[in-house]
Image: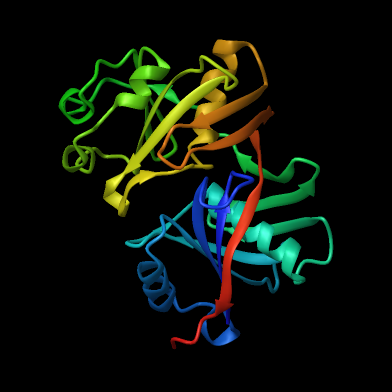
Length: 265
């Protein structure tokens, strides 16, 4: 079985967010325990598994696993998978439809790299969780929930860069991930960092699914439908965001850094 490591939302190796991409044979296509073991072995924030789809309105069935669990939506591993399929031959066109737990998602090859069509997850303001102040260590400006994530706006880009959350407390919050964000002060319209210790990810380098929340959050505040987000992790990465109705188009590039054969059964 072919397996790849791809750095997503970057045009340089060893930046962006690394994802595993596995193209399993038919014997392993529905083996959840096996897929979870592969993801735990690779230890990346997400490993994607893509197999040709049968009987659905899609080209490939796609699933995503953290080292600890399967998730409903992952942007960077979808970008990484599309990058592999466009470059390695299984995809015969410039458009791929993925059947996923979040519905059919489309990836298109264009001049900006890969364009993903994802559901928008507009956040709604919620009461500040009692543990948030201690967990985050900074004063929030606004708190909202979108999808399975908690979004916390803070005062400035500098605060986002400096935040050092208590990950044990973050893991007790009733959300998949904690998104810390602020308006951008340079080339990016907004900046963010994402922490998801409850699913085995201390800090995610670049998070496509978080931008399904961040796009609808910042678009009305900045009065723009096309935005650029910068994720300020140690590796860093850039995500193009465009709101189209109830969808979010995410764009980015990717770089394959490793490919080979998975021989473990």
